[in-house]
Amino acid sequence: MAASDHPPGPSVFDAEQHGATVRIRLDVAYDGTEFSGWAVQPGLRTVEGELGQGLETILRSPVRLVVGGRTDAGVHARGSVAHTDVPADAWRRLPGRSRRTPEQAALTRLAGVLPGDIVVRAAQVVSSDFDARFSALRRRYRYRLCDHPPSADPLRRRDTVVVRQRLDVEAMNRAAGVLIGLHDFASFCKPREGATTIRTLQEFSFARTPDGVVEGTVVADAFCHSMVRALVGAAVTVGHGKREVPWVEQVLAARQRDPAVPVMPAHGLCLEEIIYPPPEEYATRAAEARTRRKLR
Amino acid sequence: MAASDHPPGPSVFDAEQHGATVRIRLDVAYDGTEFSGWAVQPGLRTVEGELGQGLETILRSPVRLVVGGRTDAGVHARGSVAHTDVPADAWRRLPGRSRRTPEQAALTRLAGVLPGDIVVRAAQVVSSDFDARFSALRRRYRYRLCDHPPSADPLRRRDTVVVRQRLDVEAMNRAAGVLIGLHDFASFCKPREGATTIRTLQEFSFARTPDGVVEGTVVADAFCHSMVRALVGAAVTVGHGKREVPWVEQVLAARQRDPAVPVMPAHGLCLEEIIYPPPEEYATRAAEARTRRKLR
Image (cartoon, rainbow over all chains, first blue to last red; front, side):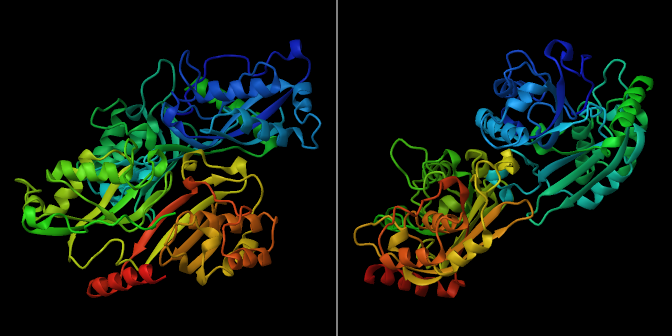
């Protein structure tokens, strides 16, 4: 799912033609229910498409977005981060005659043009070293499961997957534990030509909330396509008692997609946070990440 | 809003024609977004209409519902309670050839026929003393406010009202405090011929959650139409610094609707719980409640 590779393209928008640009970091939340994912696709409603259009409306300038977590259709975000380079004068002009800063004006004006299922939480000028995708240290996702259908909250049905059978959270955590660390996650990824499937899974755990919902937390440096949902699918399989922990070890070691691992539905998944280093490390981190993707 | 008076009607369904009946208590949750409220209205999608139809489908018998909290269009519920009298043999037949109890079978079969925005959480046989409306001791509502639009969670936009200006929660609690107790709440009710507006407000308070949302809790023996939303509107007016606590006292004392009190939007409101006495007090409580409504 998220954070899969981007198509190649300039990350600085046409700076020469438009004079000086500033790089803007956007913190973005969205309800993914009615989006065909993040990435622009012709004829489909996407987060990138709607957000880009909103920015173009308020800036009166074409906008190209780079995101730190490309989510699939139906996946939500509370803490996605994107960057874009915009003409410095368009940015400065945003407040108009108001006393607001361009940052404040951007938030208010975006709220006025964006649909209700996208909220821009922050918009700030960052150094051009910052790359929403490559400067990221890690991504944190949450997956929500309700394992007792009569307890399902109809107000959370858009971001909670209901399963019929009770989940054994301890067993899920044992299954999750064997996956933590640096591994080739090919067994949990949709294969993509030339793309590495080696990742460091830093955290993977489940807990039952006071509401009875089982929440999974998944943190890794990056994820390949459908990886979070397949990892959760493996844990759910064990949580339902259909398989045991050694099976998870076998699946991981096989390094190829196993049809016995269900890819869980998209709507239980939410990109909660993208974690970046301190500003002085943006460039170093981006260079490292770019190199690692190439080498693997 | 909720728990306004019902039209008169038999509370026991046509027992003689259908032989013995059993009284069923239903615990119900719903996302009110796409309902024109609880009560059946011709040509409109209502919770009572959908739930009644679902019950008629699984019981193959006409169903009349009595609810403990009639909610307006757009108001949600996590803990509504209704009762209905159904033919005892239809109830007993529910499990078919399965080994489930009628209670379990009712939940599973209702889940199969109801739309995703209604969940029946429990269905149990109760004594015929139980009256979902009149046996209730009190109703608890929650109101969700986000006072910082960039922090709004798009996944909670269906049950959270966004206000532009920061709310002073302490001031809201001071305003709420003067309303607690036994009062004539005519200033906060849509007037209805012959209906009392005297209520006991047992709890009314606001707190900021870890997510930054301001949650109001409102508990009373019963509420008249639009009362919770007007009470919250008065507190929000004070929380925004537009009025002070003495204004709330004046509004209450005036005992007539004050246009300066905004009736807050329906979608921030959720009926969380209806509280009943122990079974041996069902009948006494119902008799008390009926008498009080008549006398006032």
